[in-house]
Length: 440
Image 1 (cartoon, rainbow, N blue to C red):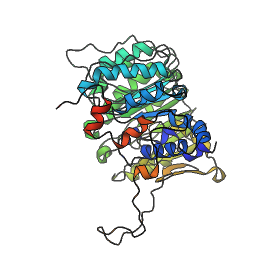
Image 2 (cartoon, rainbow, N blue to C red):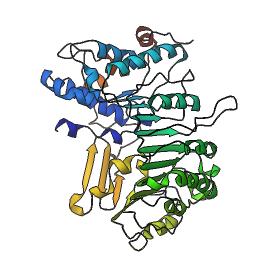
Image 3 (cartoon, rainbow, N blue to C red):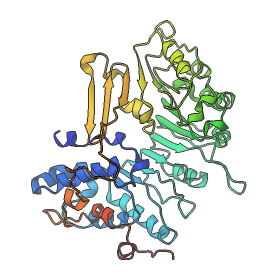
Image 4 (spheres, one colour):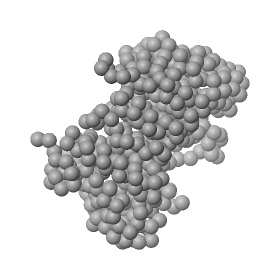
């Protein structure tokens, strides 16, 4: 329990910032490494926290991770439950990448969550063969429809949660399989753009009898959208799958130009009679009503928006009269918009009065949940005498100073996959650790 309190929950880490050396994900990793490196006893207790959720930020980390999983007396693979790939896979490393992923799957029997969230497309058309026992998948828009269809066919029978960006279909490709059966799927996250929305019609033909949660993420510059465009594609989907939904989320892409349209959400509510929790886009068109909704979250508008008055009108319209079963309304800060699953990971019934208020603090992350409000608190930065002068009390501390690791821990197990962060940018590292060379 003590170690759990030293690191934030993984759902508060935005994978899109993971490659940055000063990202929150990297700071969490340093903290985890520090816990493991204290002594043999701490190493045994802290290892599950270190290996539970693995981010591969650079391609060179994957073979190093394999050496750790295959060597040593401790079977670290038993701790791995989540694996996220967020890196560029070079062309010459493609075949080896597929082999390494398959070996990781084999060495991690409890792995249930796999994500490829890199913005960079794979050099091959398909993903590596996925583990049939995977229950949670998450893909970025770098995964095109051929790879997406092939991946879903491998794990469709066990899949519980799926997050992906609806891909466009090139003229020379086969459209996604409209007859896909996902008998256990409970949650679906679809990212769509003004272009790819037309292919949502294929997804709505999938068999998803247990679907209870649905998130639509509106990607791309809102200038390309219109209220009618959004309503037409979302209404059709909810007509097909809305009957069993208890959770509906319209997630915004935060652009200053999002004020150019409003979204008619009421037609969606009419098609989802069992809804209990809804999360509203900041540009939702009032009025709204629903007899069964108990909890309402609403995203705050963009900081540069000129539609604050319209947003306030919507917020004030969320009353007991319009929602007879309503138990609470909560606003979500725009700074947390990258955390799409936040409304379900931190449900609105956690804080019902002032006594329930809580904060999550870790380095420069400060999240505060008050009654009716969940937001990030900006840190108070010290005032500098001038841009050119450093604080006299500031002492530079490198990553090696923060966490001194020599590549082994007390039982002799390798941690080189973690240490590859500090040297992976160099050509010598690539030549030493990659089985495939670097294109020149």
